[in-house]
Image: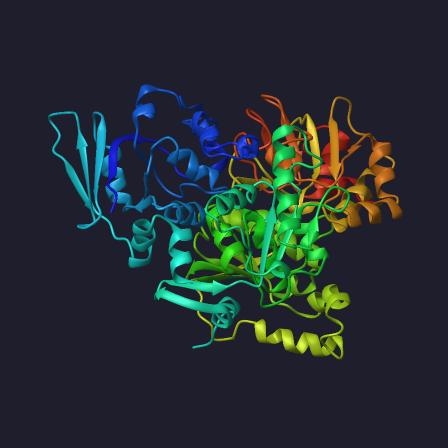
Length: 178
Length: 429
């Protein structure tokens, strides 16, 4: 099974919606790669425009946010724009149904952690990186702040979601099974 | 233990249950538009799987940007057009016959009680108004739907919204659904299916029921639905008259798609609408809703009447009743887009288009257009739009713009005054 994890970027907000992740004006693209530079282009954090081209954003492999991530549109472009930016894990306390399904349908991870764990991650100082252990169902969060110990949280994925990830997505799974 | 309508539909369509939490359903209808389908088509072609499970169960339309505005949207249309031809998809609606998918497909009689329906569009929940299970999905789900005729959903969890009381004049389905979303929040129905029931829903026509179900997703719901009844049967009669001896027989058969009295719900809420007043959104989330009185006087730059929420003939009539003989406020741009050619034609016959034009509105062809900021009325930075649409997200109708969601009557009143306005002041006594 492929490995997941890497440097994390924290987006401290509930209800981050699909239109903020990828505005509709880019839905006229017919290749996924054309979306690349528009990731999180319209995101507002604390009411202010988010810098979607910061060094932290550019090197991120994991996105961490709060509740109801990916609400709104069904556009899978909101998943592809992460994928083409090499971000294969989104962690949140909850997801909108379609966004979550789209992530697993592409064979990548939308991971729900408890609100307590999410709060604890947001409370960590320093630059964070995340390692996902699919076998043990554990996430290790490491900070470059030497004073902080690593934090571990458990997650649970049902066998169907795991099968989608190991099959590389729903099309491959469905083609093999139906 | 009894079953909900959704459990009954799932039972009747169950292909597989890979875990107790996941159900693979056979699909009755797969709906397609030019924004989310072309990448699925191209991926299938690339993989040597350019097939469809059943061309008669696939319905396709070009609606989001139509006629094409540039080379890219022209290419999306071309991919759809060629695919429909190649795959022998007869129900394909192109320029001249096309309209907003969630208004056009019901009008064609494609959605029936008890159906399973998917589309690569979050407002697919609209079709739940017919007592169908209809859900928005991403492109991969759509792709598998096209190829295999199946889709996976989690085991359904339902919540019931019982709507009682009587609406005051000038208060409509849009106000009801905004009040419901305010109450349950944008996350309150996530992974649930909302059943809209109660005496008020029983009296609603299909257009009003579609407005309710259309915005279920704004509360996070997988879908929203109403029980199919006489109103449903009368709406569908011209399409189903050969299947039943009488309308009564259809109504009787539809009752098999009603939830049992002892069905289980995650939550039941009751909303009495007798004191409800016109509602409006004020922020970037559809649950940020106030009584319109609290927002009165807020200036707008544009008024947009249309969309899958409120672009039907019943909606245009509500706007026209207020606009008749009046003019747009100076400096305000008015845009109306009847949701389908049939609605446009009906509005012409009823003199509604003339009322809009005399008021100074731009009358567009049927399209999704500016509702999602793709074409035909995109906002500039710091501009404000009063819209009968369903989503007020930051940037939705254009980067830096603000959208206030409201009813067709409220939008018309706002057009006349140039500031957010209660429509009831314009109602003829």
